[in-house]
Length: 380
Image (cartoon, rainbow, N blue to C red; front, side, top):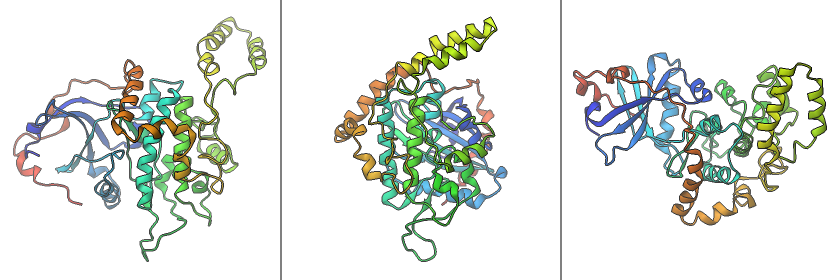
């Protein structure tokens, strides 16, 4: 890479993704940039992180170091990483459809079942890679799974990763008992055994539960535990009691008499009108949809209790993925099929950008004596 940032990268836009992504990191800014030295000026994402705002720098360095250890087609990578003054610059591949959370932000009734299968299948390959190295991700969520326009799915966010190999004696552990405060932002997707925080611990099957939550969210359009009364307290109670999300389709909303009864209770004409509009325009999306019975969140699959939950190998052999499994012999065929599905969603741009006309100075990149400061390369 050239020493001068301005001669290599050009800032295009400031990106603002879905609320879930924005809350994940309040100390960073995200920009869409292009590499002027590459053919067709390939686009990338630049995350600008102010290290002065970080309370635990050593922990952050450990989180970033995971990128140097992984090399897989479905895992997010770092193209470049450098330091300017107190600002760390991370350059990553650009996913034009954003994260799955962004995709749902413009598709509130969920996405088609075939696209769900593609996304979950490719995410499974990334988790398989991690588990082969005895690493538990613990951060699998819709906001951390990115969809590229070439049909590739990328799993990101390694700050919650933990190795099953003990740092004390180097032995492989069957269960781990790590419960950090950082995990609270993953509460919607965490497996019940992690929430228990008891002496039984948890293992690699916890990631299978989180992936099942993402699959259900992609199908329904929202997370089943989001916006619950009393917030996190109710989520904790529901998961500990064994509550499992359901698929919202025609098999779940068949009690039309209950809806008519509710309509009769509404006395105000404007409320009745709004409710009729809801029935005519919202519920048909659910009533007319029928998820296949083989959708992999039923008992003894991804959402079951740990003792009954399927392993990653069993989930990969599930009938839900038979089409993707057949296409996976030829990666190009797999991606071409997904690209054709994504064409439907291109009209609704999933990334909710605030397009601001940015001057190059808005990123606080000094133009004078930049070359001297650019030599402060981030070392792991």
